[in-house]
Length: 94
Image (tube, rainbow, N blue to C red; front, side):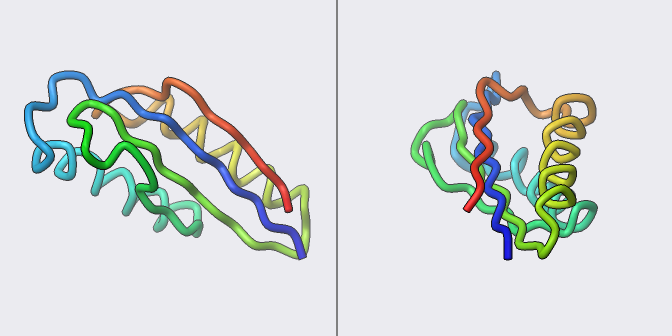
């Protein structure tokens, strides 16, 4: 069994409230879950208007598959997500 964890630090420019931040993040979280079949959650910076930390996790019996999926998540978010940008990313394996 292989567990892959992708952590993304996001910047959401122009957010003026936590409600607006949630409104921008929810479509991203739902899309990543639906398109890549990963578990996704906001895990940090929850009280900051223009910053968010999200984690994407996948469990697989094939480490190469898990790595490919998480790399695709990052690539998709960088090219298609209009709500902000990725400041930093970290990929971990267990």
